[in-house]
Figure 1 (cartoon, rainbow, N blue to C red):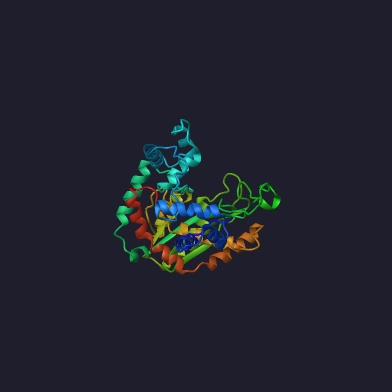
Figure 2 (figure 1 turned 90 degrees about the vertical axis):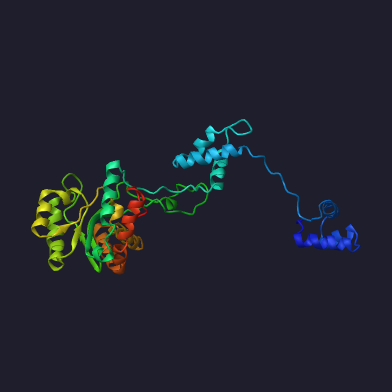
Length: 345
């Protein structure tokens, strides 16, 4: 029989106080007569119709052990709940379960999340990032609007970011229609160069002549022939007061590249190593990848990917580059707040 609701319990007590017999009340609410007798007994003893508090299952950890579990994971966030569980002996004189350790952590506000990924930053790298951010913190948006941010990025036909989910029945994990097939090395791909500034977007430049094997990557010669000469130099001839930004990749720092930029009178912004989070074009690549993920059907050849990239590039609102450039002051402040460490960018 279904349990009586709180309202039904109150009505049943009211009927009993009005003089109805327990049998008549049980018939009215279609429950067993013993239910009415127990309800009346509880009301006489406690003055309430609510259920008595249940003791529940005894806790297997003490408050001191709960604090130890919490503090150990604050100090070592990558430690698993199973590792902690094996080191904590509960009140039942046995190691606690992984589920128990997880419950104690969740109760204290810790969540099991995917870790953010970032480059390995040494003390030297952190100091350089901090010094760079402190030197540019007083730049206002007007000065940042005269910086052209550039970068290269590779886009693959096979793209798996690890966040895809599939609805399947038990035992169908390896069914053909439940397996996401992808190439371990990304398959066929394109290497792109692009640049953004305030009201300015250059590219996409799709590098030609690249392929597998040594010497077939982006070299300094390809960088100068396919990027600097046809795109960067003409831009700075028309915008002489701008500053050019590119990272410390080998094709950017070789003597030939530096001499070409110096002879052309292009001012290059110093850039700290291992600082992709400081370059707003990184989020522009994310926007481009989002556009590519919407392409249906998916590109299957390099030519298809080329067309999809160019179309996706034009679909990104030009206002997006302005928004990203305006974030530079916040990025510098974030590096300072992190003492040169990782930031949310």
